[in-house]
Length: 305
Image 1 (spheres, helix red, strand yellow):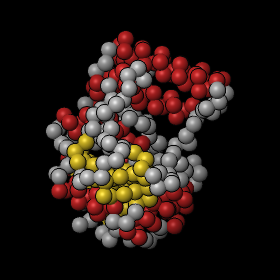
Image 2 (spheres, helix red, strand yellow):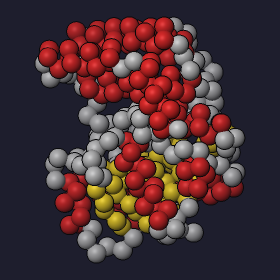
Image 3 (cartoon, rainbow, N blue to C red):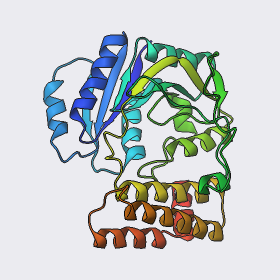
Image 4 (cartoon, rainbow, N blue to C red):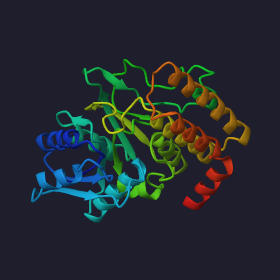
């Protein structure tokens, strides 16, 4: 059985190479598609040169950097063009341990799922991500209600089980079903893809599974540059899109999200927890969020549909 891999690269040459080599070392039948999202550091050229002539590894470049969702959709479509049905979408900073890929795709097929996610370990080998058995509610997202009972038990060690959503850093898909339910929604640039996919799958009555016996290691945030204002702003923008387009919240609820989340971002800026590129850029970022209206989001989502 051929397994396709889609790896999104953005200024992460070393991590992408490590990810590729972990696949080659542990997976027998594979075809890897690396999508470079217009990296400004020449990593596309470096990857092309390194894997030039290497069978079953294809390095392509997105025409523009339109974000995580768009870049991965390009890779998925390329895999489909190659006749591959079972695809693993993975961040460049993920390493596959042992037979994780085969086990994960086996779980996908066995349970006739649209998405299957692995057990994810952090840099130190500890469990890093627990799949959601319930999606967060609006008040939980605001931090006004505890998120108790939304996650699978941390000590869970049983068989593969159905869940609401898995981590977006690495998961397997049934390509035909994934595309049928809408694929990645390209109206987000970064973050909240898991929540959107969860709603799309539920609407199509397609199950999502967690496979704890497939294990990968995730070296966080190499491609996004964590702890910078632009990351918090993109997170908030994607959250607003998700809540309006997929949870149908009201205009007043949109306003409340902006007030609460921008206040939290401001506090983090004041205490130095996130970096920024000057007061002008802070002002521009805040104005952009306030201008991102309920009506704009509705129109974007209708246009996608």
